[in-house]
Image: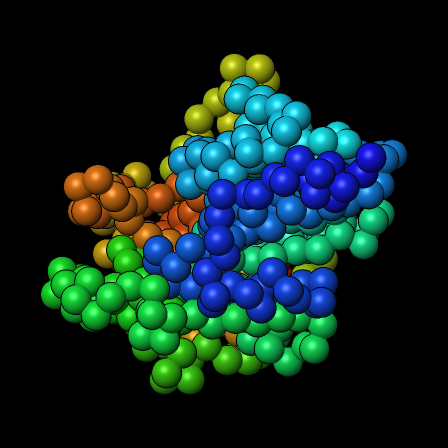
Length: 435
């Protein structure tokens, strides 16, 4: 007896009546879907039931069907989706709840499991028949193309992205690209059109929230500033003034890099030129799991003439295992002109970035990931107290934003190098010493 017949004979009914606004999602033929929906629209409930239905109706016996719900963190997955998943799946005879694994095992062996994208490498090497990706704006944009998308290749699996906007960034870009692609179903569900929440409730929300918060959370605006964003306004101004554009490399001016050195997570590097009062941001590089030699090679392979490299203050700390600091290792690898950014409070560094950004011209294409990080870098939000905490969220945006902070704090120490001796510069180029 297959899963569909079992449900029919036992008169199983999932205890959920789909909201009319989600009928296009449940009845879609497209393999890919993206739903931009206001808060409390019911998108999590709709997608949890979509996963259960898919696991029940998938007839493949070997390997067993496997589905996933991916939230920005494991804690968010548990808080947001786990209760719904247990509630709706328990009406199915033979359902097995695995609390520790955050997994539901359904008849015929189909699995639905929750994951946190803060450890998205755990999905590497798995196969999936379908996946829901919740709040993609808060997820490292590399998670989808590098890890999650390949999990769907074996069995032509599907994906649904669900979320509420958080300013211009990779989620908005995904939506815009999907709207141009007939292989995608795109649903935009602002509160003013769904009818899910009453007029009185929406009016009360408008009184309690700033205009930007309301537009983002209830009207699904990608243009509204991200709540708590440190640099959202300055980045929006740079965009509107045409300073996020193509920025050509000027071979006469030196390039300065600024680093955020990761140990267990990513290392980020900005490549900049100082020309008069302008800071030209040419390039951005970020990866994780690589040794310091990888980053030095990445710098050398670029066609830039370097004036120096700004690294964090803690690069001077010695590792217990080797007895060497990362500063010493970089010097041993041949990196010249290293400058240590002065020790500072994070809030002072954030203010320095805010003062620097109006002078910046940023390459739109080469710095795309770094631009997203700067736009979405934000203060931590206390949902219970409905206040912003006095510290940044530590997520994928931190690496690029921290590296830019070291740039802002370190530029005072290197600004005098802009007025360099041209003859010395040319001798250095011939000697090959400028990296």
